[in-house]
Amino acid sequence: MSIEIRNVSKQFGDFQALRDVSLDIQSGELIALLGPSGCGKTTLLRIIAGLETPDVGSIHFSGADTTDVHVRERNVGFVFQHYALFRHMTVFENVAFGLRVKPRRERPSEAQIKEKVMSLLKLVQLDWIADRFPSQLSGGQRQRIALARALAVEPKVLLLDEPFGALDAKVRKELRRWLRRLHDELHVTSIFVTHDQEEALEVADRVVVINQGKIEQEGTPQQVWDNPASPFVYGFLGDVNLFQGRASEGHVYLDEGLQLESQEAVGSTNSKAFAYVRPHDLDVERYSPGQNLDLQGRPTGIVVQLARAIVVGPIARLELIPADSTQAADNGGEDHLIEAQIPAQQFHDMALREGETLVVTPRRAKVFVDEAAGI
Image 1 (cartoon, rainbow, N blue to C red):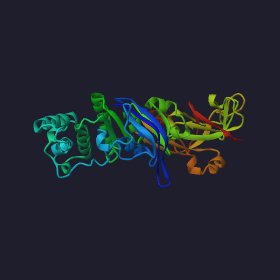
Image 2 (image 1 turned 180 degrees about the vertical axis):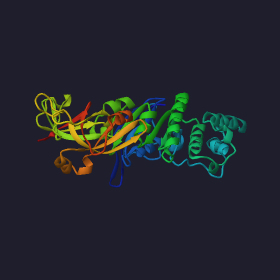
Image 3 (image 1 turned 90 degrees about the vertical axis):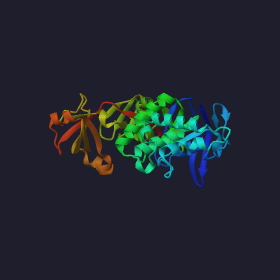
Image 4 (image 1 turned 45 degrees about the vertical axis):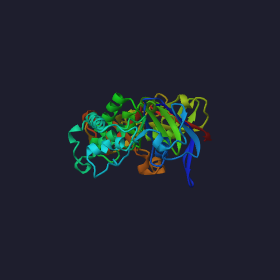
């Protein structure tokens, strides 16, 4: 089942939830709608489901216009954050519910229902608890039962709204892997909403990043990670350091005194520039006077002080303050912390101590130039 979303807008009172959203979802794809709270991702999911009607625009299922088709006629399956299992029913009865309430002419026999339910419970690896009640299950087990119940009616589209949001980190990680494996078996067109970047990048075939009711970028997890289309996408997909400066003739001159070459700055003349650097893309060395200068006497790195080091597992996370205290103060002090990540072994080998002066050098930076904001 393919889905075509065309120029969809939706407003609630004064709040514009969606703004002219268009998106094509291929049959059998697993899509993540990713964005912060209030960005419009759940509204879009509910419009696809038929639980909301767009003010403008249309929804097509495999070419057929379903914009005004009732939710009961769309043949979609739902999995919500808080399970929504019937507490007075056993696991078996919960999964069988959707089959038993079908119109009489479409309803399977009891023997067929039993075979179908037990087959689904085996699929989600919980056939051994068919007689238990939801209160006797763990959160992860309840969510798998909710998924089995959604799949029982053989939906053409599976919709999941923050499906693992109520679970602890370890269970979430296990269920993410499990959902991916399950999808590879079933190939049902699936759309899930999440604000968890790692979840979206790990599970989805394609990630759709939404911000303030608009699609900022769509692409494979690797595409959106390697080539963010906007400052918002770059900042939303994981930790990042932001440096400001000006762009001119292929170079970016950062406020910290560092000069970077940048294709994005070609053709610019004194335009405002923003350079984004991931913590793991910073080289860290000890500082010695004159060491971080090129042949023209220009800085090749940023002089910083090690304020705090957090070493957990194989990674050391360093919180660094620019040595230029005026610059730090101008940027709000703590807000201008630079974060670097290095292997824990390197941290121990260097025997770094808090309070030391270091030099950090970006290996890779993503530059965005604001031509409208000349300096």
